[in-house]
Image (cartoon, rainbow, N blue to C red; front, side, top):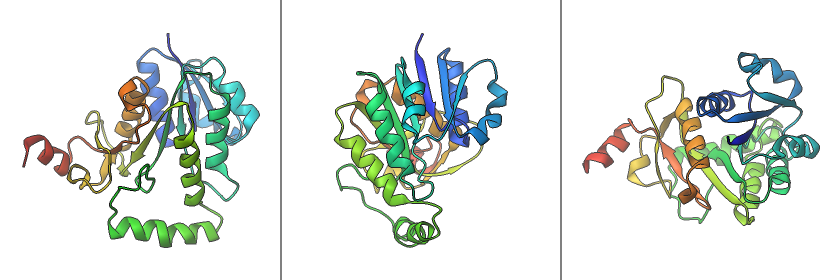
Length: 229
């Protein structure tokens, strides 16, 4: 039986990943801040919860011990190197050969070949900087976190999510290597399906050292690509 650790388990995306992992019969260890543990009450008795900040190296070390896979929500919270600290702890303490899957947004680029819309550029360059000044969000630290992942010799995948919405699952999202590709034009994915793709990436060695940008499989752009329109 596979044992997986979900770092950031109490958030919306994290809870969906917990459920997908349990549906597969996996043993699940979840990491979340102490004040958020109650958000996982629906899984009480079915998962092991380790409370603590996800960039706390000792917390992460305990959580990933013996895990075959680690799924990480790279949350760019605050200005205390939360995302990069989390990523570095996972890279340092996950067992050799473990599958590591990280979540982030489309603004992350692996090879510099992504083509961004003006809306994404405004979000990153204007809104992102204002959020950092307010000490709420630090997108630059998320970029640094992914840079460290890309440079590592671990078996990583970085899943780059589009805009998200809630709703019943439509199935596994489709993906492309670069933002700006026509298949991604709709720029929307159900959060439950983002979590599904994270879990699928864990099981798919073809995605090792790949940073897929995803979009919902039932979106207009995905369906147009499928029909060759």
